[in-house]
Figure 1 (spheres, rainbow, N blue to C red):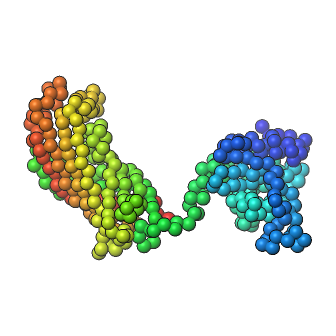
Figure 2: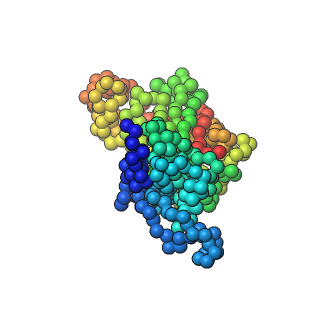
Figure 3: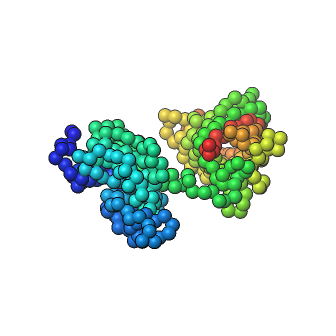
Length: 357
């Protein structure tokens, strides 16, 4: 429902239209997304470096609302009466206040209730967003993405200089892994289930992770992988074989295909006897025998647009005998399984990195 703007003044716009909008964006007094109103300044003049009251021009008015994403930044709202059209003078007035060192707002919103203009401080020729009151519902998600608390926080993190040691030439000091895949190739096994290239051609999905420097200075790639054997997903999760930590002692990640970087992962573990896991979808969990394993993987690659390369893997396990799960089919399968086995092979990988443009 469109308000009766002809009967409203500036105060009405602030309290009936603007404040509810700020609440929808998650801002409220006394929270980390705080609202301050008509903030006084210790030096209420346009501080241009001189700080001389007789020469510095006085500020005309003050912002009606300061919206603080506490410890990350802020933005401001300047409200005019509905009877006034928004002018470039209004834009410049709001900018002068928002650019003041005691405010330092990243954005400012100028509105008379009928029209809304969102500007980046210091960029006054064109608003980032411009809409009429009737279009507010269609613009609300845009506003969340620009001036919501999380948006201001992300902007601060993105624009904060990265002064830490980089991962490599042209790389930041840390980067997120956003996807990728592992393609299994030729392999050998003394286990009957892995003969005849049972793994060859299967794809494991890289689902996330990050690359950074460990506390001891080594390169550390933490990688989450979704196994191609999803029928054994519960057992894989139980064994902790979804997340892998790859280490490298090289100072930097290579960007040269002729001199690749080698990351190594070694993980060992065991499952105590009687631990339950769902081995097949639709079947209840069953108790398992004692199981010990060691997984070693070498990932050799370089960074282009992605981190690509080849891998070599060596999986070894030892299985206890004489354990009864209570499931005849499972017990028969365990009895036919070697008590020790290994799988060795190779493959290729492609890891997608969230690199700066």
